[in-house]
Length: 272
Length: 323
Image 1 (cartoon, rainbow over the protein chains, first blue to last red):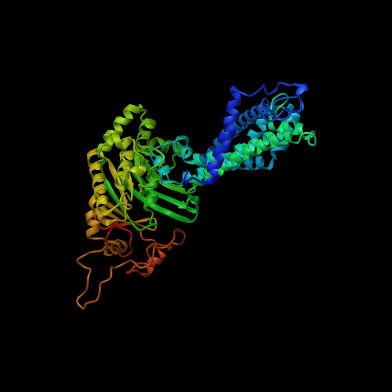
Image 2 (image 1 turned 60 degrees about the vertical axis):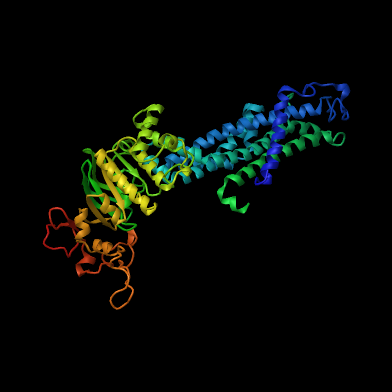
């Protein structure tokens, strides 16, 4: 691993761990994540229940695994959806310029002014709390982030000589955007997507904690946290486990994003 | 096939190109020389319909008899590559580093001529052969960083030729290249122009390359065309003081070294630099730097006068000709 920055390596390992566990939960968990067993509640860690059981006798490891899967799914959809719309708007703004660019960027400012959680609460108030609405809310807050970074990077590429050459070859703005602009702005967008993945995980946990995300009986780190809160003095470990999972996942994606930026941003190459 | 009349490009008060008038027939080869900032590149971009959005255009330009002076971007897109094409100065920067050069060259063929990938590839191979790239089929799959500067410039020439343009504009195509590579690229452009009966506009500040490549010559200064005529005639007997200055500033082994009294001879130069576009003198734009200036020069702009049937210059001191 010589030559690769430490944050990239550590981030990749943590992300690999979380994504691997989430993927594993698709085919195998030690127990059914939502299966209750009141008699076996607050069970201590044992060979059968590695991290014990919760207040309803559900297996904690199985729940954490299922929650990892839910969290990854939400973050993936939210980043892909918000990211695609944002990138498309950014490319459009950059390609057309003029009032279109101005309008898109002012809308992005407006989007930035909206706190994500407030927007999600608003959505929940109007449409009722659900995981879908949480995904939509997180997607929405991703749009301006991606629109801005895409437009800024694309504007740089539009001034390159090879774009002039493409124009001289009679290519339309759309074709230039597809063939020359997008591939050359991919690197910063991928970096941003990795970092936004961490933000989305955190946002999902927060919304679920507030009861605006995953609804029972679906497993979610945020919901596990809120359920464990009332039992803080009886069984503190039930709050610590999901908290640790959130931390590991967010840290992993943040480090990975930072590491990717370090190796893709030529301005930073000399500092390494 | 392409003609400009009184074509002007300006940015606010700054005039980048003033009353440009020229016409090119099929197969004609025109040289454009002048210092940096003289309007050469703006002339080239004008012929491509690629002046910046912020610029104001006036005057007329016809391509194949169609008025294009105020044509829309969409109309120009159809014209580019098929009628007019351009080769740029920096072969390093004019190729997308993330695209295989073959894909870049095939793009306009597929876009404009609707060729299938296989047919575009066949045409790209024959174009690479035509511009002297060895082992063309393998080169198509390479990325720009795998090619030398001269080869990249050949790739860009192939790109410009992709849709058989009737006019090729080469904007300082040899400036970024080694002298011997530059010579070969110049000869390549001349050969292509002859073989394809394609008009060539060769923009350069290398007088040697221009005399090698072109039949007629336009000398530009401060956005004006100050002198024009047959290349050989203009270089042998320049009329405008600026052209004379440019010619005198060429390094010449016969005149260098030491003079009779043993003093090292200095290379003659034109004093000063081209003023910025917004600060050009009101009269003759060369006034202030001219060695033979008279009072009228700073006040009144000289018109282009024809000294004989072929050669013209814009200078007050040029007498006897027709205004």
